[in-house]
Image (cartoon, rainbow, N blue to C red):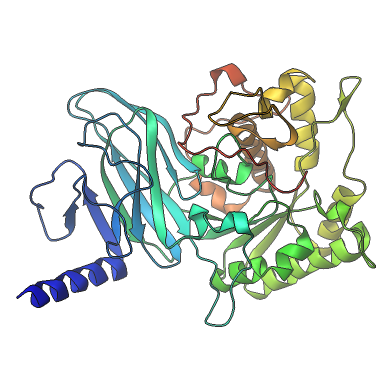
Length: 425
C-alpha cells in the first residue's frame, strides 16, 4: 500500500510538471472547487520532488497576512500568460508583482476592502540549455539567478500585499522581444541594482513577452561566443523582435581587429543576419551614458561606438533607438548632484551588510532603471513598432528633459541584497 501511494504521488507530481495551465488558490487550504484548482497550503514548498510551492523565504501563515512571498512552478522554457487575482475580502491592499529576476509587472496596485482585480501579463522563462549538446556559458554569479533556474517564480510584494490566486498558462503564440545587452539591460536579481530591461515589462500587457538574455560585462562579440545569442535564436520565431544595446564594454576590448568599425560592427552584423534569417526584426539601441559631468554637462565616454552602431543600423536598414542621446538629456535635466538618485549611490549602512559607500556612476537603482525604460518606450513609439499595441493604457508619454520626481517613486525592496557591483563599468 505504501508503495502504491508513493507511485500515485510521483504521477501527480509529473502531471503538474508537464501541464500547460495551472490555477493556484491561496484562499482555500481545504478542498479544491474543481479538478483544475490547486489549493495552496503554507506547507507547500517548492522542492525537487514538489513542482510548485512557496520558495526562497518563509511561507505566509495564512492568505490574508500582509507579508511578501515567492511562489514557484516548474515549467519548461517558453512564454507563460500569468493572471494574478489581487485584493482581500477583509482589508484594503497595495500589491506589487515581479517575476523571475525582479522583472516588474504590477506596480503598487491598490484595491479597496472586499475588492478583487485580475491583472494579466506574460512571463518568459528560459534555462541555459539550447539542446542536448549546447548550453549558454553562464558566469559564476549567474548560477543562482532566478532567470536560469528550473522554475517560473512570482514575487508578491508591496506595502500591504494581497494575492488570492495565480493562474499560469503556456502561450506560444504571443510575439517575443528578445533583449540582448550588458549590465544596463540585464535583469538584476538583488537590491539596489536595476536595469531598464526588467522595468520595461511594467508597461506592457498580455499581448507581448520580453525575454531578457542580457548579462553584466558582455560585449557584442562575447555575447555571441557565450552562446547567448544562440539560445535566443533557438527560441525565436517569425514575427519576433531582437533588441540589442551594446558599446558600453566593447570599447574596452584590446586585441587585433578590435574597434568600433571593425570587430564591433561585424558582431552587430551577425545579430542582424541571424535575426532576419528567422523572420524576426532586429532593433538597435545606442548605449546609455555614464554619469560623467563637467561644467553641468555630460562628457562623452563611449568613443565612437554609438556612432558605429548608428552607422551599421543605417547601412543595414535597422530601426535605431538613440538611448545615448536620451540618457544625456535625462542626467543633465536632473543635474550633477540630483542625478545620483538615478544610480547606485548609497552611504554605507543603507542596506544590511553594506560596509562601504556605493558610488557607482554606471549602474542604475530602481528609479533610474524605471526612467530609462520609459526612454526606451518613447524610442519604440518613434519607430511605431507593432507590439506597442500591447502598451498598457495607463502609460503616459515621457520626456527625459522632464523626468519624474525621484521623491515620488515608490519601490518595495526585494529581500535580497548584493554588495558586489555588476561586471562592467
